[in-house]
Image (cartoon, rainbow, N blue to C red):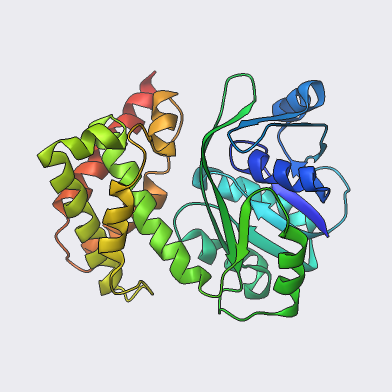
Length: 307
């Protein structure tokens, strides 16, 4: 299969690199600066799961590269519209689009732009960052990617995609409940990113404080109330499961949003916390912790614009 990975950063660079390492036909859609960097150094991944250094194929939106069988969207939410515009020339009648963005409301946007048939569900769990030299750095072992038909069917095309992705040096699997999986991840990432950015600390020291642990629990409870109110397809015991998962994270774990803030980069406040807060207001649900989390993020954004 011809695979297009949108972006060669922390996520796209990692999973695209693993697929190339396996021998798959991977092309990266990148901006001019990243294209030049990759041409000079190759794609470099420094990982606890094994290092990669490969020469890669790249395109930009102006190149005539034809249609791809599958497109992995690994951009940040605030780059989604630009990514949509850029991939349009590469989307054919049979193209599958697999978004790996955080959150959930990008699915509606992709369906609006490309039609329901082309859009699969997808997500990933990985703690990576792109350093100042353009290297993808991964220091924790988790490298999970899930995909599937949004209605849960096991179609011929996802079986073919599963076969293509199998054997990769990463945990990539077909899910029969991908939309529920995406909502569960949305809950988890919103809580983790919200609490670590609010406290300006890794998850371990936050858990150590009685007030920190209580705030984590309260934030998860608020997010759960919102999702239940809108009848999101979440599991009955997911709140307790997510709390246990957060308490099992490595002591020094930082969220990607926290790392972006430390680098003075844009963040996905509106796509993650902001979307849920909008729903809470619409349904008149009291969410005091989420409000404080969101206010903290918006203050950061306002200060970022002044620097």
